[in-house]
Image 1 (cartoon, rainbow, N blue to C red):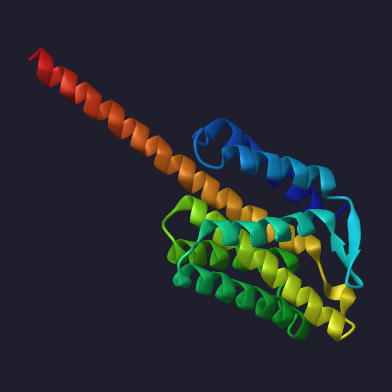
Image 2 (image 1 turned 120 degrees about the vertical axis):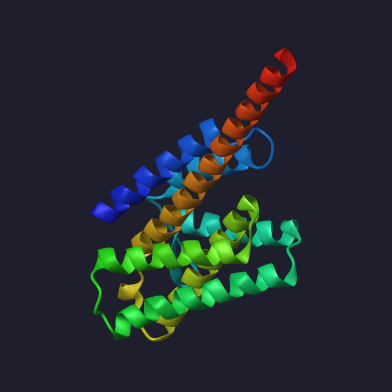
Length: 201
C-alpha cells in the first residue's frame, strides 16, 4: 500500500469518529457512519463495469451519489454545482496528465483547497455540501476514467488520489461543522449564565 492509501484509511477512520461521536443524532448520522464503515471494508476490492475496472468502494460512492441527488430534491443551482465540480475535477486530472508540473502532494493540496471552497460557495447547509461534494467528485472521477479508457490511458487512473482528495475535503467539512456546533453550544451556555445572573440579581 502507498502512503496515500494509508492516508485515505486514516482520514476515513477519523471521519467515522467525527460522525459517530460529534454529529447530532438527527439527520443522516447513521447513514454516513454505515457508509464509511462499508467503504473501509470494500476498499481493497475491484469489480468490472462496462470493461472498466472499478474499485468497489468507489462504485458504492457512485450509487450513493445517484440515490442521494434523486432523493434530496436539490434546486437547479445545486445540480449545476454538481455538474461544474464534476467537470472541473475531470479537467484538473486531465491537465495533470498533459502538464505534470506538480508533485502528488501539491496536486492533492490544491484540489482539496479548491474543492472545499467550491462546496462552501455551492451551499451553506452541511448535508447539502456533503451531497454535492460526493456526487460531484464521484461523477467527475467516473467521467475521467471513461476518458482515460477511451484514449487507452488506464494506467493514469489513480483511485488513491480520488479518495485522498474526497475524504480530505469531507474532513475539513466535518471539522467546520463540529467547530460551528461547539461555538453554538458555548454561546447557549453563555446566554444561560447571563440569564441566571440577571434572574438572581
